[in-house]
Length: 135
Length: 428
Image (tube, rainbow over all chains, first blue to last red; front, top):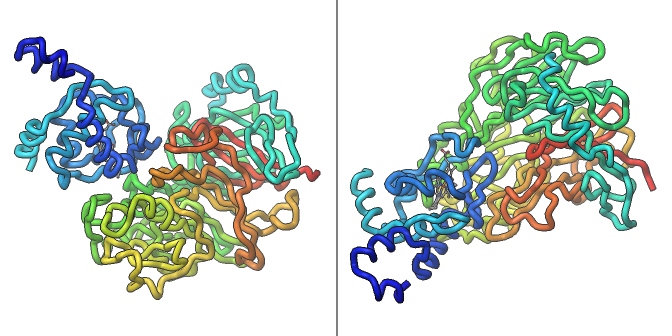
């Protein structure tokens, strides 16, 4: 990634940073660690979830879509049991507001770029700003 | 009974599906043998066939005296929540499928001329004629209503005794009664307030209409979620198998994920009126072989305060395997060792990562005089269709309900693809 960035103007760095799929390996490694400890019991190591209980995190609207609502799900948990791709899930997800902004940014970036997902990273600043508004 | 609606299903059964290839063959002489066609591995002398496929999320099952099958569905199929399945030409394959009941659920059973079935909040019954056929499928009597339906653990398993009582499991709508359900480090509510209306077995009258909590008796408490619930006719007592607690590692100062994967047992109890089996304050630790105080209530994996008086399990199965049904074998087809013993259908675990998942099979527990008298063993395996299940979605089939046919055959439902397996014994 560094090599490409080296040759192009600053403006495109931001643009590419937001859309490129080559997320820094260090971020992915940290994100995977958070995921294994706090998410994979329910959503499973491969993101496939548990039929009827915990939804998969593969290409769902929440995972790939609006970043603030995704961050909010981590901070506040989820207990709405809306349909996700035609199925509902009976378990509850507790708030994970004990995770730091860094951990949340890492884990969501990891989720958005694993299990067949490809989406932009989520920054610490974005998590901080949503946390400030979600009290 | 709106037979037409199942046209597509019947079409599938006859034309889309290789059920006709259900040859019963044994491939070798080892203890567990592959029953070709069903994909199940069974002890020598047993074989399995698939009687029906794609009948939806097939949960509990009951067979009438003529071999007609009733299955409760946890998702409507063509608008129906109960299926009636018949093998009218006795070739081992279901050829007549009809449905009734517009509610989803799990519990279904037959007793004294009635078919009983539950939604996740109510219990209904249907009068049967002398052939044990439902007389008015669209006019059930509602006998119990208004039960807690908390999504988690909301299925209402049913059992009846010989004194006109019906027993209903009302599962706890949480894992361990925490202030924040499944929250890392969250304390347990003390006392756990939900125990007055859930987390136990309630007893109602089998023939009284519109009963609510005030008409029922909390027969046993401290049971997180019971799906296997049976009246044992031999000793005239209620037996239950509980889904034990999840996620001990929400308290990482005391438990690693690996410890969570193996410690908290799935317990079988004989329960008597007034019994307290310990949830949410205590769980059974399979390694220490005793009840231990839960971390939500100050436990550290060793303390046993609050757990001394609680009822002990008669069998402690490995953690998280999800016992979804219980059946006492009273038939004459299987060898003598099976008589009055218990079959338990394990739906299979999800909370054992990073270890591989466990369960996804039917086990047998030998019994004598109403007590287990030897170690349990895996009876029917191979439902998942894969060597190792790391995450539950990899399992192609998961055993859920158990029933015995009039000939003594054992029936098992699968709620992933909707297979109905029939297991018979021919001898060697």
